[in-house]
Image 1: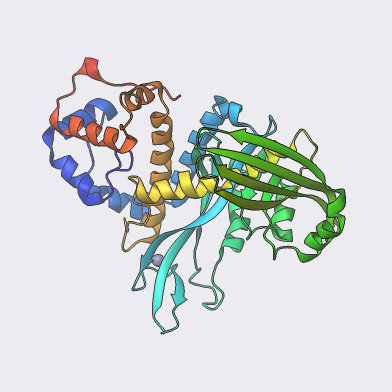
Image 2: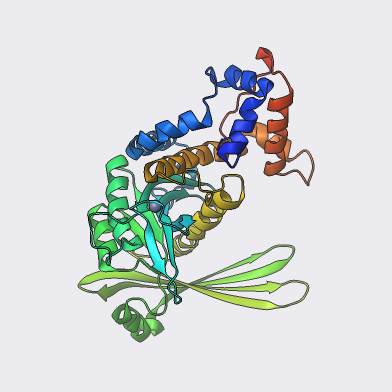
Length: 383
Ligand SMILES: [Zn+2]
């Protein structure tokens, strides 16, 4: 269902009714398509850690094959973005792990959120390495709900368990610059580049303000057909916060449109435990900005490009919901590799209007209306 971007169990069942599709499926996967209800029964009782283990095992395989080698930050670290996303919202209580929210008018909504850790790359990959559901414990006090901050502590334990020696650089948004996160990263030997908003870490930012005249600077100029971009990087090492020393980074980006001459400016601030120099600053600040790929290439693709992240795959079982989510992560990973394969890139370059969505549509049409012969089986090499 997820690999073929069929966004509901019903769509999957309809495919399964087509005899050609059933036969083709067997040719490729060497087993019969199970009924969606039978799969659902299994997913309601399967311990979610099983699929999390499988996902981690697959990612480890990619790491061992040096798949991410060319994307390493400072020649060493894998960039791991951390962020939460909604997974489902209900008008009635769905399970006793639901998070609840009461509106001003007293209407209660029930929802599920998941905190994700995804390897992100400048080429646009966003591959899940660990997922932690933000969930209420039925035995716990109702008033104190679980939250992203608490879930991060558990997510970090998971990442360390599955990838104990992997050199990791954590990328996170303005919710994360705090001592709990710094402690976890330092204890695990991880580096971090965390977004610093104006209100974050007051004493740290005050010291930055006092020392700003002594900050080191670096500029980069980039131009293409439509715009000219100037990037001004500023950094200060050894800024004290609560007895520890970190580096402050700022990047100011000015984009001028070539034709209209309209200029726009953006400012990005970060705190990192990687001391900076003139050689590292551009790569570090640019890597910090890759954090948004977890939202765009990650959550946005899963919501709007064939995975139906917000679809209620299980209306009754919290366990099944987690298992569908893990399966979606695995399918999304596999599809990202297929979409970057030599074969897929060739198909995409056939004409300028070709899209991945259309290729998948054609693939489904092919599988449901053609009897694939043994010698026609396609084999993809991950690019
Ligand atoms: Zn629930």
